[in-house]
Amino acid sequence: MKLYYAPGACSLAAHIALAESGLPYTTERVDLRSHTISGGRDYYGLNPKGYVPLLELDNGERLTEVAVILQYIADRNPGTLAPSFGSIERYRVMEWLNFIATEIHKGLGPLWKPTTPDAYKAIALDNVGVRFDHVAQALGKQPYLTGDRFTIADAYLFTIVNWHNFLKFDLARWPTLVQYQARVVARPGVQTALRAEHLLKPDAKAA
Image 1 (cartoon, rainbow, N blue to C red):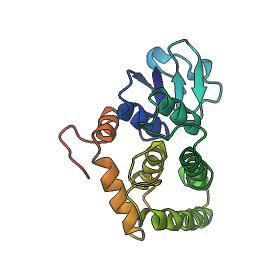
Image 2: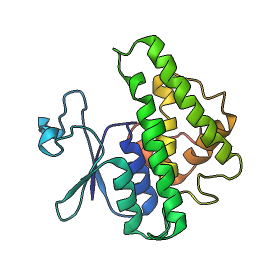
Image 3: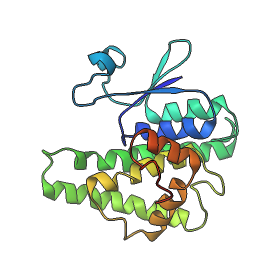
């Protein structure tokens, strides 16, 4: 499998899942400003949507959309990063994936755009803050979103919450989230992905 990614983007969740899965994979960086990949090739030629992640399978087929890619990776090594399909535990993971995608990931979207008025950015961040309240409440009872085990939902949540480093909003309001981020970043697979994307110094330990 080959993952097309941009450092720190939502594709980091898929990168983490691959590193955690133990499956063989390669990666290729995408320049999202020019929409090119190595050699100046047009990324739109691979993915007409133009964004990341894109997962190219060994048979040449390609998958997009992070929540789908995460589940595909998990199902290549059943039971490691997500419960089996059909179980209520799997639907709980899917429930979190959908919540993160629609309520947090997309909620933070306006903060990335320089043309978004500051007043609207504040409103968007307030709305996401309510979602963070819900997540923090869940994590106050258990180490990971669905219990004691790290899943693809955690890879996704960690990635999106990590955007506070780029968007410069303070997580201090949610100490449970701060602790969660530290717990996740301590995982070897997570550090492997972060270092590969140059988001963690080679000699760094858990942040």
